[in-house]
Image (cartoon, rainbow, N blue to C red; front, top):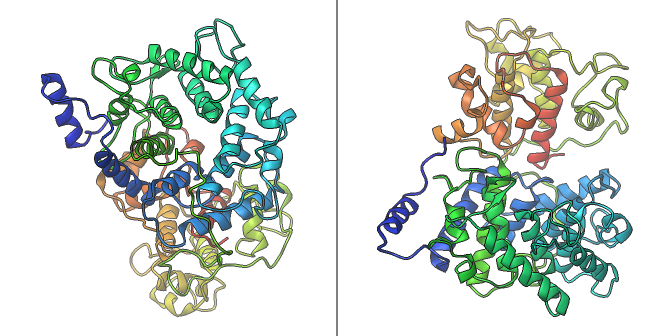
Length: 533
């Protein structure tokens, strides 16, 4: 069930019921407090690597303080990502998403690891061929930095959107222009965001007015919005962003229903730690929090008379190229592993989820195959093998002296230096009675604990309170089977997306032996989050 909202929100709701005070509305000081608190939550959850674009954009546009070098860390990682994909992505909207984050942090999307992200955005033949969201995000991205103002693709995108307006004034992902398909809240709001910069065109101005009327009619009594019959925080967030791009206050009379505004509705999804739920009872993923956060930022910027969320001409320009040195606060002995064996790979990982991870780690000789020709991704891994991988991954100097604590780690064994080093740095512990059990297999919760300890050495904040732990592991039906000593580490791995919940089904299976493919993905993600890859 949804956890308790902030005290002031509950108090406010009670007073509203009693009819003694007005709605929260858009008080700038209160909004600033909300933005600051959600930013604090995001700083504990965001890795500042590729894939965190929405949170990074919101943090940059919020003006809240971020750790030194955090945006530089993202820039370095996304340059590597774009170069690794040779500037080509399967999802065309990815170009726009990257452009927004890059522009927000003051970097240049026309030169990202040698690739120009605006070229495919201006390719109307391809972007215009995808669903309506392709045109929406192409316009938003181009307008974010005032890029290519004379490119004819701009007007073609505008015309395409106008041609898709439904009979009720709204827009949907698949509805045809003038058709009776019901409008979708999210797509209608996003279309308004894209058209906001073209209101000087008479046809656009008329379309915007119709779409606003449509959204007003779709609004619920609590001030919120639905998509596909489900009330979600994301739908309300997108409406708030649309209002912000148009310079409209959430207290505009068209968007106050029974005394409730969209902002009131959004805050009903807010949790005590600053995160937001997807619906009023479920959804603890990052998407709801990301969208709610940038909606709050958009509303705050409107109330303070600043540039809108997506109009980023006021973004401070970054100067020079940062050094790739890892996270602030990392242990001084941590070193970035360099590529020493380019092109390393194994036939038995081709097409598997772990392929990129195995290839990246093998190229740095962090990980080896079971033979020269096979990695065996579905095989289990021993504790000694994991110790060797994590020591190599962190660039630590192998030293067998630490292995003397274990009677079953012979000084002459190949793994003694790795076990000794991992033990000395607090990454691994024994299994009691002076034994390390080097040939024993490692299970999922043990791998999570060791990976979290390695993450702490890399400068990552691995701490979570009891609520945070429940938030990240209670989504699995067997979460109570996670040993108490492993729960915080397991929750951290999900929070940092070293473990990805979408890759699991209903069960976490903490005692299940982890596979070599899963280990490769965990270590690979750790190094990317720690800016060491």
